[in-house]
Every structure is written in structure tokens, then in C-alpha cells.
Length: 381
Image (cartoon, rainbow, N blue to C red):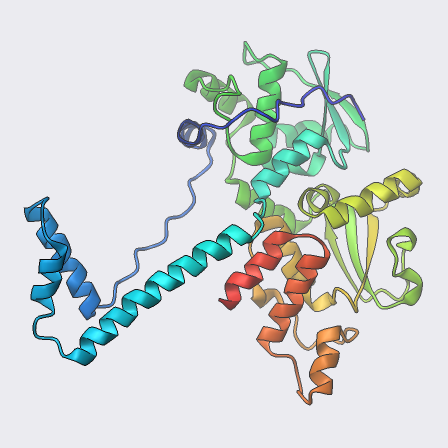
């Protein structure tokens, strides 16, 4: 593919407040709606809630109020048992808060899909088309640009095939190579980087929106890619055939039981396991044969390690950063996994939801995908 002329300075710092402001302006102008705000939950009334209201009421009347006096007056008629319960409640809350802080500090941070897609744009994993703008080459991903922008969707449709070099002409004046790179990054992440981009002019954003069209919210377009498999170039094959268990021999298996179409770019961006597997196949020359046959890359997975009933859960987390246990296909006739064998040995007739969650957690660890593991962790808390 083309030279990587669009790499930004990875050491540049973000200004959170300015970045969020610019992103809100860009979302309003380019058409991305803000994420829905959940409705405020109704609070249950209790003695502690009443105490909190009274403290707030006192705060309104005086800045120099005495907390101890307020609590003393409020609990003057309480019994010893009620006072003891209040103390235990405060101690438990403090301990739980400390444990939560320590657990969060010990847990490795998991990248979001926006961060991983930004890295995908930087490092050019599995690119399949080159955009040529003012003499600079930008290796990009056909599926992502087609899903994100109607202008690029129509343009890319005119240049089918792997590795096509597509000249780009922009009517909006003043767009240099750096600004075009920032525009592409915005398509990948849905965010404008404050301080490292020149796309901070509202007039310029308005002109670009008129030329390139309005954009959906990034999650909406990723969900569309997941559900429709448009421009998919990979197939996950779940097989129990011993002849096709290794990545190096992941050819088409006649005994495959379950197949799901997906996108190499998304897999490579989200999981080092899939990224290394795809890069190894590219170095071995297998992709050349697949492109000659115009066939998608087949990634064969051992069902005893990654059972097919969790395939939808895995892809849902990869595309949307969300672990949806309702995607588990129960009652399927897949090869018994380790957890299922343990359940049968212990006399259990079937796996519980906790058993399934623990197995998905292990899958997340195996493919080095922290979002999946941490999503399961929080669902069990």
C-alpha cells in the first residue's frame, strides 16, 4: 500500500474541554446526534435520604453550619440499634468505596472502539484502498469510509478491487494535506482533536458538511456494519476438525459448523490476537490467493476454545464495546468446552448463566480483548 504520510504526532496532548466542545459543534453541523441521555432514576425514600435532604436544607441557610449538630438533632430520638445500623452503613460505604478505587487502579485500562479505530488509522492495519490527495497517499479501509460517509461510499464504488488508487478532489477551499488527514481521522473516530487540527472553524465545518454530507453517530454506523456485513472481507469459521485448528492451516473447512462474516480491519483494530493472525497470513502469501479468487479471509477457530454459541457476543463486543449476554445461542450442538465438561463431571445438567459468563471472560483473556473480559466482570458484580 502507499506510504504512510498521514501519521500524526502521537505525543500531542488532548485538551479535554476544548475537544469536547469542538466535537459537539461538529456533531451538530455534520449531523451526528448526541448519545441518548438516560432518564433520571427515582430515588427510594429512606432515613438516610431524609438525613441528606436535611443537610442540604441547612447548607442553603448557612455556609458555616455544624454537621455534627445537625446529625445530633436528627438522631436524638433514635434507638441504639438504629444508631449502630447507621454507623455500620457508613463504614460499609467507606470500605466499598476504597475497594472500588483499588480495584479500578489494579485493573488494566481497556481501549474504547474510538481509540482503537484511531490507532487503526495511524498504523494502517489491513488497508485495502489508497486515497491520493495533493500527491500524498492515505491507505484507508473501504468498509469504514463507505459506512461513515455517503460521499466516499459513492466514490469508492467507482473503484472496485483491492489496492485501488483513488484521486481525491475537494471543492472546499483551503483544505491542505494535514487537514484532509484530520478529516479522515474524524470519520474513523467521530471526534475532532483539539490543538492538533485546523478543523476548528465553524464556517469550514459547514462547507465540508455540504460537500461530504451529514454523518451518523459512530456507534450507529458500526452497528450497521455488524448487522449487514457490508463490504465484509473475513469469515469466522467455528470448527472442531483437528486438521484446521491452527491459524497457519486456516483454510476452508468442509466440516465447519458455523460461519459469521465480519471485517478484517475491525478485528485487527480491536484484538492483538486477530491482528497477529491476519498479519501472519499476509506475510505467508495466503491473502494473495484469496484476493485472486475474490474470496474472504477464512479464520478458523477451535470450538473447544471459542464455542460458536458465543460468536455473536464476541462480535457485538468487538464492534460496539458492549457485552450482550442475550446474544448467547443456547441449545446449540457445539463441541463441549472445558466449562461444559466440568459441569457434566460435577453432575450439572446444563451450564448456568454464571458458567457462561466465566467462559466468555476466558475467551476475552485468550484473544487479548479487555473490553470483553471487563464487561463480563461488571455484569457479575
